[in-house]
Image (cartoon, rainbow, N blue to C red; front, side, top):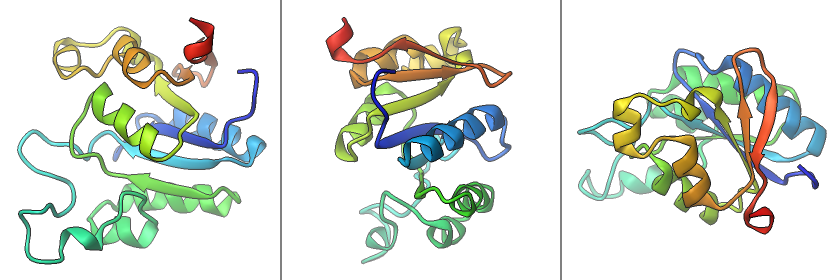
Length: 170
């Protein structure tokens, strides 16, 4: 990447299966003094939203912003993600969590646009997705196409590559 990011969106999970990606994101955010948003890929479920919606009780949806601090994450029942955000904050990183209501590239792109994300860090496994991920649009190609933002791919060993650096490079 030719310039330092100011806002990084990185995959994470309840079981921390993306631990090396999260550590690479923390390292990148710390070096660039960038804001880090951890995208809890496990939050989006087929039939349930991770936080209250407009269909919940009056005022319930407003209790959960789309940038969640550790207290908000705890209140939403996402203890593991709260711990991950707290860890990043303990490292001096301005970190937040995001609990998406849907998986896939379109939701990722919309969120990235709303929050000024200028680097998205994804797991290498997205380059060879399974059937369900392909159907949901949770693939590396779809993320690149939908977001039009620089993408960093992190493999299981923590190696970072930049297969696409943004609209100006295409």
